[in-house]
Image (cartoon, rainbow, N blue to C red; front, side):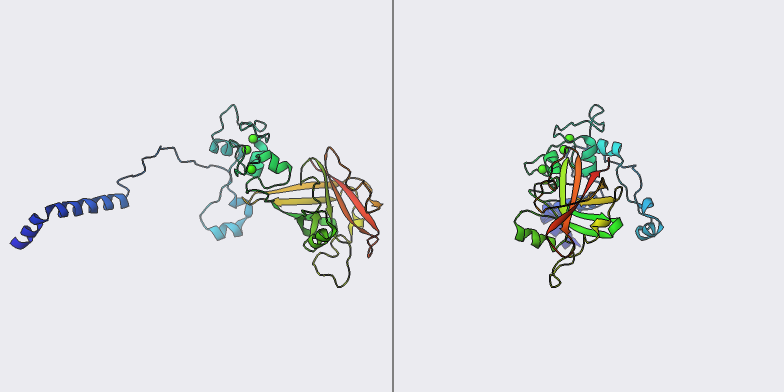
Amino acid sequence: MKNIFKTLKANWKKTVSAILIFLVVFATLFGLVNFDFGPKTAPKTYSGESFAGKLGEDFQKKIGGNEVYVLAYNEWADYHALSALANKYDDDPDGDGLPNYLEYVHATNPANPDTDGDGFTDRQEITNGYDPDALGDAKPSAQIAIKKINAAVPMVWSKSEDENSLQEDLKNGVIHYPKTAAPGQSGNMVLSGHSSNYVWAKGNYNYIFKDLNDLAAGDTVDVKTIQQNGRVVVYHYKIAGEKKIVAPDDPVIFENTSESSLTLSTCWPLGTNFRRLIVKADLVK
Ligand SMILES: [Ca+2]
Ligand SMILES: [Ca+2]
Ligand SMILES: [Ca+2]
């Protein structure tokens, strides 16, 4: 016993620091000491609408007693600390030309003109079909659905008008012609799909537009975009008027419009590439 005290006495500095270290570690572990000296802000709380409920009982069972919330618009505005003077749907506090309601739709930052920091404003990216929350020239993935003719197909953002590269893109879905309008944006968006192809041609979409001729005024075309941040936007277009059969180079195919419109195009008659069958549609607002 005497020896122990002797040793402790000799090493008292070490002993005291060991006890102190133990106490600090203990206190930290149990949250008695908080080393976060940064500015304290109240945690954001969401009382938004429960998302899970909308997905039904099966989904709720899977996540058990847990809940998933989506932000209501006003909570989203609070989350981004928009003042009462800048939180209306049409306000544009970051001056990027994109009103708050569209920042909300695309899950971009209403207080930052360039959410992903790639040098292009949120508005520039969206009006030109780029993903506003993904760097550089990334585009949202996109799909086309035309219920009437049972077509549900990826939309390929063609980068070149070169015939060979367009043919290559057609293997992967319906193509979006470069330089034509982006989904939901002003101007004429031109999409083209195969109505037929050589029987030996590879690809899953060789006949995707074979029934395009069945579309009539009032039928709908849905164009869905999926951003990298998970935001999904579906644009609805409605077939406007009559179909036309035109020469492949007829300017009516690419004719620009001030409104948001869509031109669907495919080779015609079936089994040939002599002419084009085109169907025009307008964005439903
Ligand atoms: Ca804005
Ligand atoms: Ca913004
Ligand atoms: Ca950007």
